Length: 251
Length: 311
Ligand SMILES: Cc1cc2nc3c(=O)[nH]c(=O)nc-3n(C[C@H](O)[C@H](O)[C@H](O)COP(=O)(O)OP(=O)(O)OC[C@H]3O[C@@H](n4cnc5c(N)ncnc54)[C@H](O)[C@@H]3O)c2cc1C
Image (cartoon, rainbow over all chains, first blue to last red; front, side, top):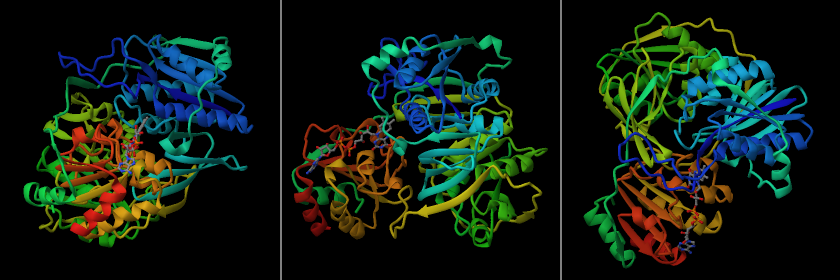
C-alpha cells in the first residue's frame, strides 16, 4: 500500500497574526512558518501505518512556492520516504485548484490512501480532502479521530461529528482527513533530520499541469476582528453574581 | 437571485443551524427554497414547514439517506440542481455541511466560500481566517455561489408559516465504496452547545473528569450547556464534542463562563462572539482575562461551590 500525504506550509500556530496596514492580507515577512498542524497528524498516521507494515511507502506532497520544500523535508524527517513539490509562483491557491492538482498527482502515483489535515489553520477552509475525494470518486472519511485497517481492503474510521462519534467503513483507495485527536505527531530526531536531506524531492512545475489556476474568489480586504471592550476583575463570587445579574442582565 | 438551503436534521428534528441558514439566505434573496434528504422524515418536514421565508420545500425520503453519507447526499443534490436556476446553495457550517458541501462544489466546479459570518451583498461575504484573528471580505466570481454559513452569526428564522412541500423520488445508485457502521451519540439532557443561552466550560485546570461535577451543579441551576478546552478533551476529562474553539464548536451565547482555561487563541476563536464572557482562573496573568468582561482571580475548587450556592 502507498500513502500520499498532502502538507501545507502555513504561519506557525504560535505566531500572533498581524493584519497588514493596507488590508491586503496578513504579515508573512519574517514570520515563522511551519507545517499545518493537522497535516502533521496526517504524516504521523501514515508513518504509523508504515511501522505496522500496513503501508510500504509514504509520499509527501506539497503545492506551493519553492519554500514548501522545507515543509516536505520536515515530513521526510518524521519518516516519509520521498517528496513531491508542485511548484507555483503564488503563495496561495484556492482549495478547488489544489484539489485538481492533487487529483492529477494521484492519477500518476496511484496511492491507496490519501491523507491530509481536515483544515489549514491559515484560510480555515476545510474543503480540500472532500474535493479530492469527489474528483477521484474515492470514498472519504473526514475529521478522523481513529483509523483501523481491516483485512478486506477497507478502513474503519471514527469521525468526530457534532453530537458524537460516527464510524464508517471505506474501501481502499480512499481519502482521510485528520482531526486533532487521531494521534500526537512525533518530533523528528537529529539523525532523521540529517537523513531526510538525502531523500528525494521531485519538483514539478505547475505549468506542466493542464489546470486553470485562476482564482474564483477575490479577497477585497482583510481586517482586524472587532475588539472586545476591556473588562474588569471582580473581587469575589458575590460581586460576580451581582454584575451578571444587574449589569450584564444575563442571569 | 434564488437560494437553495440544504437542511440538516437527524430524521427526527430540524437542527437549529438550518433555521439560522434560512435567515442568512433571506439576506441574499426573498426567493428561498429548501431541500431535505433523509429517511422517515415526516416530523422533520412538519417542523420545517413552519419556517418563515421559505417559498417551497422539496423532500426526498429514501433509505439511501438514512445516514448522512456525503457521497450520496452530494450526488443527489447535484442532480436536483441540474437545470435549475439557483444562484446560491447554502448549508450550515456544522460537521454535516463541512463534510458534504465541498463535494457539491467539486461536482459543480465552484469554489466554495466557507463559514461566512456576514453577508455584504449577493456576491460578497465576510469570513474569519487564521482562527478569527483576521476577517476576510471575499467576492465570488463563480456564477453559482456555494456557501457554508456559520450558524451562530445568524438568528434562527421565526416559525409562523406553512410552506408547500413537494415530494421527489431518486434513482441514484447507492455508493458501495462507503458504508455506515455506527453513530455513538453523546448523551446529554442539556441544551445544545451551539444554541444555548449560557455555556460553562472547563479546562485543564479542572484536573480530572470527576471535578466537572463542580460545573454540572452550576449548569443545572443556569440551564447552561457544558463545554471544554482542547486540553480538557485531550486529557479525556470529557467527550470530544464538548470542545470549543477553532477546531471544535463555535459558540455565541449571552454568557460564556470559562473555568480553569488559559485563553489560547484557538479557544478564544470559538467564544469571542459571546455577548458576555466571565472567567475563573488562579493566574491573574492568564490571557483569558483580556477577553473577559468579568474576571475572578482565585482557586476554582474554592470558588465554584460558592458560586453554585449563590445562584
Ligand atoms: C491546530 C490547533 C488547534 C487547536 N484547537 C483548539 C480548540 O479548538 N479549542 C481549544 O480549546 N484549544 C485548541 N487548541 C489548543 C490550545 O492551543 C491550548 O493548548 C488549549 O486551549 C489549552 O487548554 P486549557 O486552557 O484548558 O489549558 P492550559 O493552557 O493548561 O490552561 C489551564 C488554566 O487553568 C488554570 N488553573 C489551573 N488550576 C487552577 C485552579 N485550581 N483554579 C483556577 N484556575 C486554575 C491555569 O492558571 C491555566 O490558565 C488547538 C491547538 C492547535 C495547535
